[in-house]
Length: 150
Image 1 (tube, one colour):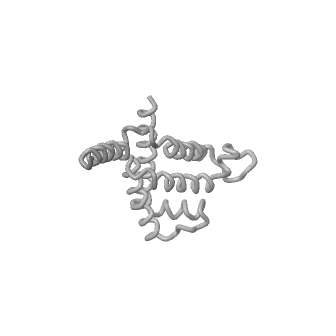
Image 2 (cartoon, rainbow, N blue to C red):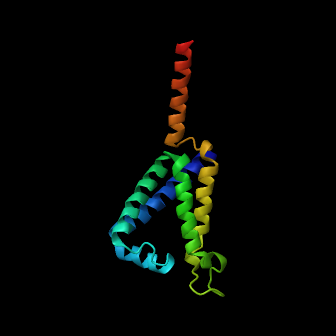
Image 3 (cartoon, rainbow, N blue to C red):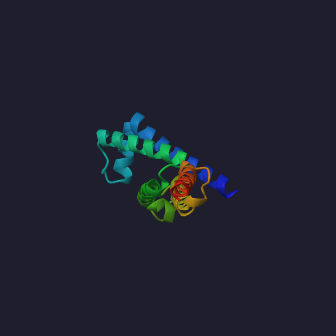
């Protein structure tokens, strides 16, 4: 059950990155509005949004495959943490009772961030990732090489 749960979590987070990346490419205006509203305009350049979109799509693809998790899961955590910080009002006050600009629809950003942490924390249990397969094959190769050298 653990390995299947990690597989589903990894695929869903990878798909989220793919969707966010595609959105930056095909709906640049939306990306500009998001940048203006949540990120103080820091990413409000169409060319930059497209670069980020492609990078996010590549990240999502590798996450779905479970490849290079040692390096890419921290990137995923960083992206989801930045998103979490951008919607902090919605985490503290989801219904906007006290904080203007809060929206309960952004509360899952906390769950997405937690899921990214789980992927990194339990990476070695993700038996269905390509990283696990590479480790398995690499271990076999190392064993055969050690036997050959003896």
